[in-house]
Length: 242
Ligand code: GRF
Image: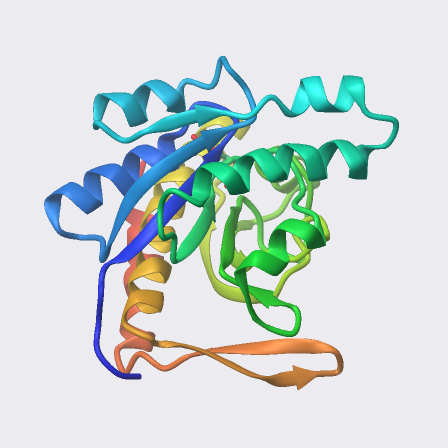
């Protein structure tokens, strides 16, 4: 709970990178206690690469697809790709790896390089649903098609599973009768940007505490005295965004 510093971030993307854009903008205008040092994409055509370059942030492609085609097993392929990623990251002293629409799992081999303690690593992800509901790649579609009246976004520590790591923060947004999956996605994404930045600021301020595991799952507690106000702010934000 000591001071506050700016975190050095490595952002991993696979696609359009609007979360990356939000982090770049907030870093530049002082709303984020962190700087994007490097961007990594598993795909050459990810638009997020352009966004990084426009901000003067080094951006690299690590071709997971090629490793998968060449290797016998997915684990072997991913570890080879991750070795290349780690070589790049070795040139930056990264505090946190921030997954922002990165469509690959990370193996224990990679995660161990960022270990905080058993089962918790300096790697975070944002997921477009209220986990453990709707893990996987289609959070907004799944939430909408299920007929949910509220959707949510989750920021969590990453483990080797798919969207299974300890939850750090969640926020919800309403789903109205006139909504479509596209309006829901738009509302959810703008909430994602708020929540992801807040979590990074909490990490920078040392306000994310990891307590001993509760039935095998580490429990994460936010020690921000303004915590309740932040939650209220998110609810208001979700109602006021289109
Ligand atoms: C977001 O909805 C994020 O929650 C999910 O992937 C999407 C990435 O969007 N993990 P973008 O590339 O940041 O626009």
